Image (cartoon, rainbow, N blue to C red; front, top):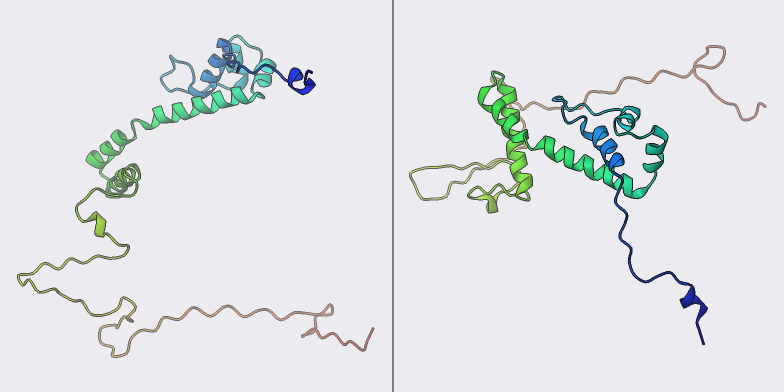
Length: 196
């Protein structure tokens, strides 16, 4: 006896996906990276990329509806971003070494250190990193070997020079709300439930 459900099912061997046509790959490359001989790497528009690759724009548009083509497009974009970002460290180094703007130098140093932290999973690789805690760390180096304790709280109120009492910081008062007006301009609006 033959099972119709098993006989009706498709073939069990996996078929390899068909490769994307070369003109389609070329059009996607032109839309992502631009022409190979363009030193500015300006990406081409949709219609122009299709024309350069020898395709018609509606055909390219229909191809982009397919999931495998969109996956290829996203993969090309990821590869292009990786290519562009490959020189970021060098650009940051040039800013750090040659910039006359001290803010740009500090920003490039911070960005380079952040990149290093991200690559190392949040660990700087510096000595004492295992003991790092958020906040302020004060290392007091002295001639005695006895530990030094710093008393006090960061929440203490500041005292101005020449004044004995601490400053008190209070939030600014909110502006007064305008009083509501009735239709005839009278203040305030009262609704009398006995009047209809």
